Length: 172
Image (cartoon, rainbow, N blue to C red):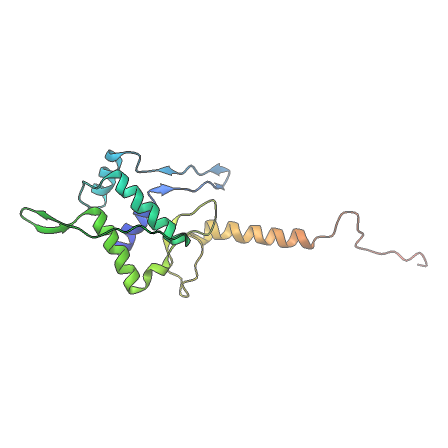
């Protein structure tokens, strides 16, 4: 699960959320603004520094596109690096690619998803029993989607203001 958390964190280094909640607009953004920000993120997640910013953004974009079904033709080969004293190690990019390969091999990649809310798109691991989860948070995105659907259904069913709901018989 630790590797899946790393994968989620990497996918969410770009925050596309633009929704309003409790009157406040969520301001998303890009965490990996420059090489220093990437190096800080790698260090914070226990990964070796040295991953090129352009390569990291390309990998993240390709992974997010694959979650939306847009797919990608890009390949990301694994490379081993030799470090004196520790021997062969995986680079940060390779650790992420290896995690993706492992989730694909075990079938859990199908549970890594982007939130179905178009104003969210947060990456999450679907822990629902059926694997049919659609929202990163049922209490936020799921609730907003279900509330919109409810309102839409009830607006479609409500009588028009000009139509009377009671008929009066003149003979009464």
